[in-house]
Length: 133
Image (cartoon, rainbow, N blue to C red; front, side, top):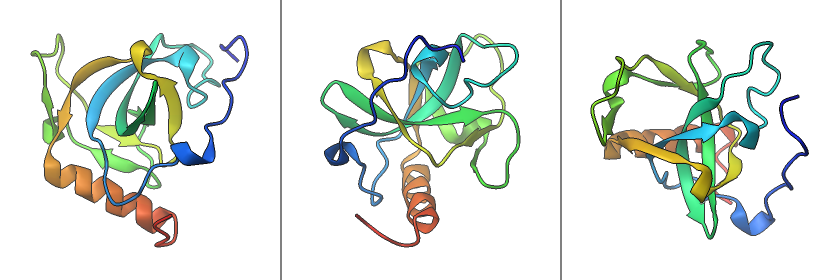
């Protein structure tokens, strides 16, 4: 809805391994994402967590503040910010559908705790039915 034309789907070799999550916390421009593009009132930026970096792309799990039992719950203290945030962080919920975003369009906010990266990878693996390919 807010995008000029959709980005091509990532090539199969861009698919992330579900045994590890890259784990950086980013802001992505909403125009680079399909997730959230159906909002009535568009937001300029959407938070997300990186799964992997593949060349010029970062595979990103987009997040929302709207609680969803199907999504991975992130609490405000689950990540370490690069700088103190201008306003208090809130809970977030990661979608299981990753999107390939050009890395140079992302703003790095911080990094997730190591144990949480492993939890995200395990959650994704369960969502995919235990398949590790």
